[in-house]
Image: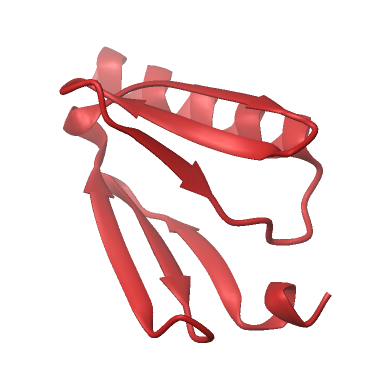
Length: 80
């Protein structure tokens, strides 16, 4: 549970930023590089256009809720 307090996912207009204070890590993924999002009980993953899979950290949200939010965000970018 402490991991949730030091990890966050920030969805902006054109990118997703993953910040983990416990790992001293920050990564920004542009929307244009994201092909799809999927998830199971163990968490949410982004599939990038280059084939790379990025597992997102748990941040206290329901897995399905986060997947739905990211899918809607991806679709929004496709229609712009």
